[in-house]
Image (cartoon, rainbow, N blue to C red; front, top):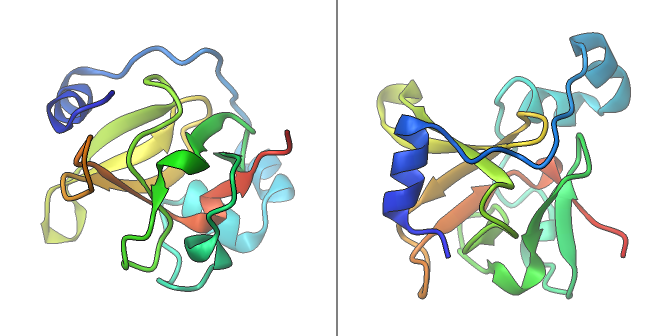
Length: 148
């Protein structure tokens, strides 16, 4: 189980090695993704809160990166945070997510990216429910339900 101290250590000192890497040109990403997916995942954008049905979707399954298909979260770790974005308590495995200290917008946060393809997913905060106390606040357009 990942802790807030581990998240901070990864953001400052380096992340676990991903199982694989996917790298594409900007032209390839633009061709593959919708405009909104591209703006969020490749340009570090943010979708409007409460703009996705995914916030209230709690069916069993797993969520993967919309860019590369890497598995990121299990629906068992999903919870209603009331923030308007899908929220999870932990990733599917320790090296699925990479962490970057984000000092934009006059604040310090921890950005989460897909460790496989560097897609911007959202941010993680230390105000989630037990047992991790973490809230992975994800952009729904960065994720898709994995087909089993």
